[in-house]
Image (cartoon, rainbow, N blue to C red; front, side):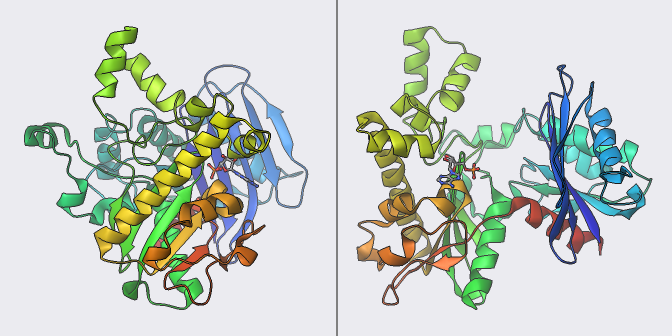
Length: 399
Ligand code: AMP
């Protein structure tokens, strides 16, 4: 069964076509600069050469049509006809309080995605455009599935998801913690249990998704009970360019001092802060490590802050669950950076965390246990694969 996975941004559409029976990626790519001129489609067929098609894409419908044309192209396509696409799985940012699982798209689902535009103003409109573009271009009746970034976290209890604001703002505007990277946290926590040969019901797991955006989830018995991101992906640990948690009083303070509008402040918090803002070097952890090694103190400070804040979240989630059996690292930094994994676990010996430096050092991008046999808490690396997870959830729903 072939499943197309689409992740639409406001001017882009990333895609992967899976043969889900063997988990193989038949082709993947990205349509960029949709609606803003100089658009191009980069298309990578499995085992073939990458192709770049420069052609005007005034809207997402044209982009989706170009992606489908590439997939069935007699020369470099990987399927004979679009009828071979059994279903499309869409990454959708926000389902608000409405869905805790992926769903087959119908009018109600589209209404919910639309209703959540204020909660995901950059992503949800683009996600819906992507769904509607596929509906108009693919053969009638091809199922579309929405896989929400927020869904996995819907099992959090109110004491974890409520903010101590006047209650009316929860009632009026649905202001609460939602959490993100849910597809990754769900996939990785499930895969961790499989990898360890355990039933997820018997495990308290802390999943550490450390990438350009980073978040943590406390997963107790297979259910998310807390997570570090909030109403938006700005909360939690400091990230590439996002502040993470700060004293909220800083926001009006800087706005007053610098004369910033709400939009300008939003940009400062989301795009100019985090390890980029601290180091002044880069949002990329490889650049930071290099600069720190060369003696750049602010790059080192940014790395130290990231490790320290992550450690505090791990400690607080262990407390929230009344213990922790497994800590699992995933995503770009979690999978590839031994020094950050070690730094985040340092001083957690009191919790029963003992990293095996020999195994951890140099380990990249593969499933492994990186704690010592004597460690009370098992520490793992499990690579995430959000696209595969979306394809699997799509398959499960349409089968
Ligand atoms: P992601 O958002 O999951 O793609 O992760 C991006 C972050 O992971 C960046 O800060 C990268 O520096 C870091 N990263 C990705 N690949 C590697 C690698 N091979 N070695 C070290 N860091 C990496």
